[in-house]
Length: 136
Image (cartoon, rainbow, N blue to C red):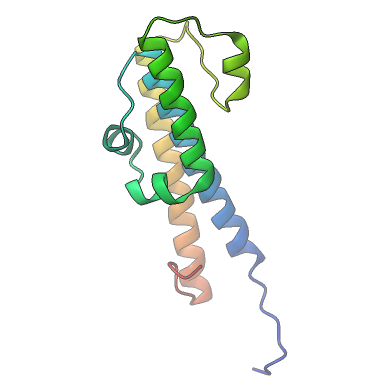
């Protein structure tokens, strides 16, 4: 293959972006549900519920910001101080106070399933293209 040949890696990049978005959506859902259920928000508990790694939570800037916002909001809610609509609008969280716990569990499972499907699709695509899956 000539050295100036450019590979078509756009399908892999799209699959990777889809995985990134699914991880973020899973984290967002977990945090929303933890706030709704008045659970204490800690990194190990969030990772346990979402299936994400602690390194993702600490090293991904967008995820870290969302985690910090949710933690601050949960602490404010726990202290029984007023949470204004401005506080909720400032965050990326979409908190629905009327959602039942069973619905939230179903939502968790759906997000995990989608994340797994996206991961497997990307993995199979990389295998078909004979490229290392873990390489950025």
